[in-house]
Length: 414
Image (cartoon, rainbow, N blue to C red; front, side, top):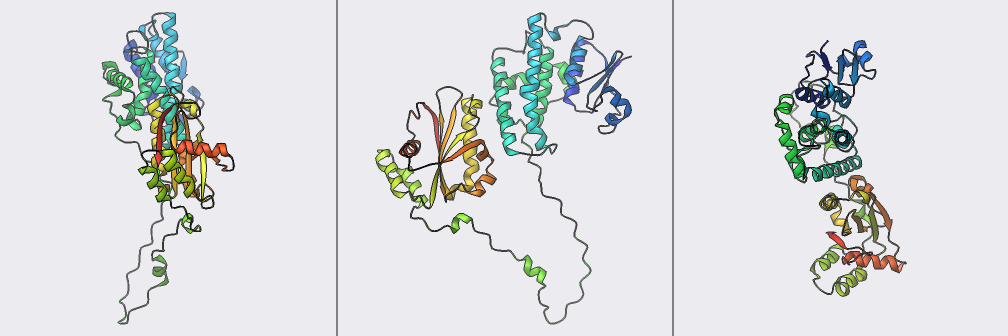
């Protein structure tokens, strides 16, 4: 009996076994009549895999499911070969990188990919966490590939096959050139491998997506309007407009609740202008000016601390993270001023911020619309505490060292 791989077309899990088969000289049949959602729910299929997942490999000794296990079986089918390493330590390293590609690359990439494709509910904080974790994995892979052509040894192994198949889905769907350019050795490795004959025979011509898919709209489809009856001839006198038309007239846009607060003697634009124009004696001019202007009744000050500083292991990734946060805060520009400090001379870097908001609370529309807010711990500044007041002054002026650490960068929102 020949090996039979039950799968749908385009399944990256199946590609692992098919590429391994090309290298190992193993013949695999792939039925062309497989229908996802039909074939894998049949009694015959469920006998091979009780939960109906694909791919499944049918062998003379019995079925095998889970794509990495299938690829391992295929790689060993014709006896020992270089796909599994030429020594015990190489074998361990092959297994190491297979696990890495599964847990540090594939798992996080799927958390980014699936909601964007509508296969799972979308959560902005969850996506941010997934992308951060994926970047951490890619950075580690990039470091290893800086001095290695292959993951293990000096030829293709099963570790390369599994890793490339996992990366192929990311390159094709969510990992744009702008994203992957931060990992040049991973890019070089990917394009070199997918153009190897045995890879190309299975994967075809690999292409990289130009854009990340939009988040699927949650707006329900509108029911089709009933077909209107032909209008009767209108009387000579103009008929009054129906109430329905009057209700359809555009309503005045609701004011932002912050615009309805009692007037404040502090003019935010005046403070921003003073901050921008002060080039010397910053403490004596700008900081003193801030405290002279500050209205504790009309405004509030808040400290924020990033909750996941242990993940800030790459400087440019951390800086981009903060930059993206400030871009998304643009909707609050009329009502806020902010300073974000990235602290530390070596990773992990600490991200700390100070924000001035109109009103006594963080604006509700900011909390609802800027998903980054949930990634920070927020503490209202107690101005009766001189220590906290001095901390505010130091953050505004980019004092260095700040709390004993050098500043990697300081960003201002104004």
